[in-house]
Amino acid sequence: MNDVVQGTRNGRLTSLIVALEHDTYRLFISRHVLTEVERDLPGHAADRGVDAVEAVRRWRRYYLQYVRIVDVPDEWGVTHPQVAEVEQRHPTDAPTARLAAALARCCVLTEDGDLTDYGFGSYDWLPLTHAGANHAEFELAVTAVGLPTATTSVAIWEVGRRFAQAPRALQATTLLLAASAAYWWQKDGRAERHLHQLKATGQRVWNVASPIAVELLTTYSTAVQTQAGLAVKPADVPALSERAARILALATDEGMLAREIADALGMTESPEYAAKKVRSALRSTTAFVEVSRGRWRLGCRVTTEPLPLPYDEQQEWMGRAVKYLLKQAAARALLNNETSPAG
Image (cartoon, rainbow, N blue to C red):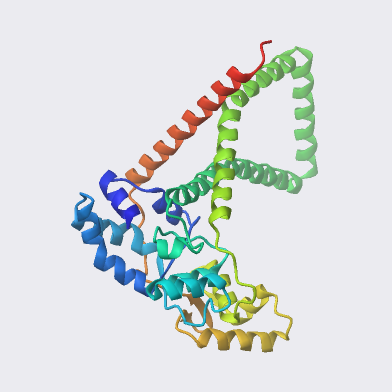
């Protein structure tokens, strides 16, 4: 709820929303949490000086479309030592602990002491949301570099394929013209000048891009460390349904067949028998939903068609992310210059 309040107060996307939009985080909640948020968010927002109506609107518009609601069975987490401690201290929070135990390794986004005291989440929750956004930022940067490279490679491959299919006479003429052009390009000195210019341009690009790349990798590494440090450890002997839940948590909304889940679990029984066992485990609890004949999913969505985030708000977040990255890169470069020995 505090993330909702923060976004409402600032009127812009939070790191958590960005992480959910880019699928670097998936948000699973037990059904009682949905009830609590719908009931308590207006008062929670008003107590913090935020418009309660707007907070509820943002919750339903920006968060609820990503939520997967799970009816957590009582048998989940029975072999996890911390689940019993949560249940003894505050039974209301036990479903969240059981869900986390089933999906471990996972991270719990909460500041509730009844959970954080036993290793389920951290009171300092902002680094975890930032870590998800940093993952999204890193993947966007990789895509921005990789897509043009992949497009160029495909184009070169297509030209080569067309050239190989051309008549022999055309191939010979093209090669002769290319060889002649290369000869005169080298003979009149243009090749050396062009290569020198290309080297100088590449050096300038590297001088600008390398500090940003280093900073991007540093924030990504910090994100991975944050998530690893807050991850809930799995139980020693989770039930089959818990293991299936972990597989389905990472699957697409189209769901998976029982035999596909059995394969992912590495079950050693015959394929038919393994699929039968998985199917029985899936049908034993309402935590799993059969979305189409034979295909299963963990939990259910409140909305069927997620709405795209407003373009201007996405651009605003990208602008903030880039400015922060450049600021950090400049600060790191300045620090390196100050600590370098005099030449």
